[in-house]
Image: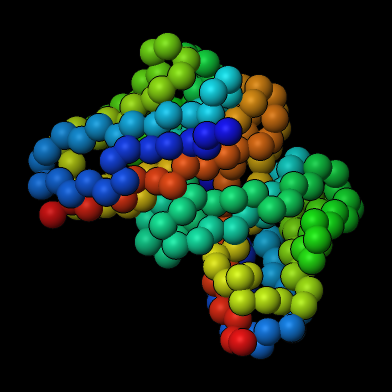
Length: 113
Length: 114
């Protein structure tokens, strides 16, 4: 079946612009995660949804970052007033309820100039 | 916060050689995971470990969950060119409201020379 898809795959934003990154999880997956991966580093947890409920947003680096999953399926990560330090790959992962398994999408590479 | 120290940072090996990499943590984890990431792709799960002392294999891959619950290793036997990539360890605390929240190491980059 279809895996996790993310769009856009690449995004270039000027400093100060707002961006919205989309994640389409695997159909039926309850859990959805966002991670930020800087160049040469491992993914870092941003936030976690179980269905439409955002259960953990402890990894969001500032109040410029906002995530939503209003119908418990597609999720959007929004970054307001982007800064150069926001440049990274943003990974989305989904998983079945109560399972360790996380299936990652290909990521969105955000470059802030 | 929790940190995972993954080593070595990079490895250059000859095709056919065995590879070993490990991960240590200052904190206990209940689940250890090993992922492989190819350029331009997201990480792909290779092996998951649930119990301290557990040894699990997946083809040429073998991983162990350390008995202290603070470390894990991954071995790859008889490496082949397609093993090239970045290998990440990740730890999870428990399956509750933070279910699946993973802490990742910074990866081991593997290069295999034919």
